[in-house]
Length: 208
Image 1 (cartoon, helix red, strand yellow):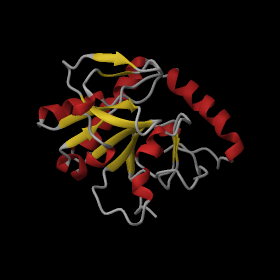
Image 2 (cartoon, rainbow, N blue to C red):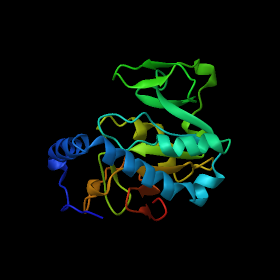
Image 3 (cartoon, rainbow, N blue to C red):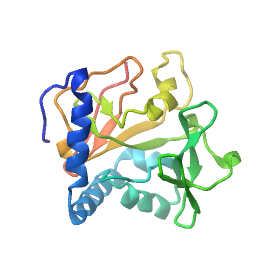
């Protein structure tokens, strides 16, 4: 995998800008090939096979598109969900059922999300596997997102050593060039269990 040097906290903004620009400049055909390669690599993963409730995301601004993998999930009878911005708790995510026929609406960031009644949403604790977008990642499973902290707040229960409930498997999806040598990890950062790129599936150690 491609690898940049270690990143200081003060450099995260410029790293985000750099990698987002590279991502958005990828030709559409290359984006589609990478998405298909990731789907091919993850389709045979035991965690994907065992998962019944899978959360994806709506790819924007060159993010690696999970749709080819979600199509495989639908074809095998799995339930698919997309994140929706929740009012309670604030600045967090819940997950609404999603199929090709699901009506969509745009949230305040202009990202499509299912236009489904909140009564049908799932809490993060009810998912088996979560596909997460990223801007950068490192070899320890540290993820750099867009900076809003929505995923970290939503899955903060995974950092609680006393938590005994369902522990969804968190898989970041990205391109190989988004790997850096080392990202700073804050106490509230929820690490990934794995990252899938067009080149490889990297599985990380146990959460600490």
